[in-house]
Image 1: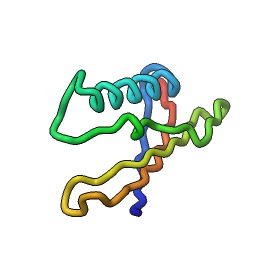
Image 2: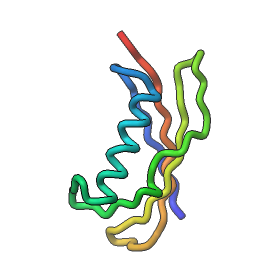
Image 3: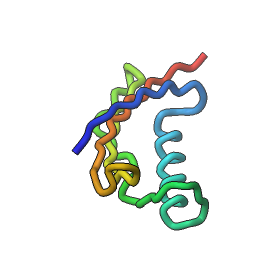
Image 4: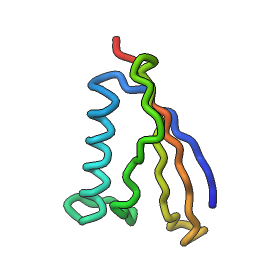
Length: 86
């Protein structure tokens, strides 16, 4: 299993609203409502690991099956989101 990290800076809306939106996109990609060139599964939705409202950060985890050279390998993504409103 491989591990990678993504840092996201949210500049509009809330961390929770973006979590809901991205999870909705993943479900739509997995059920074929919308499509791209990747294979998606609803289980790839972001799971909340930690939410620190005073510090305006959220930490998520997602697991994906890779489909490139390493077909079948899993990759764990850690997502760190930071709220940075103007």
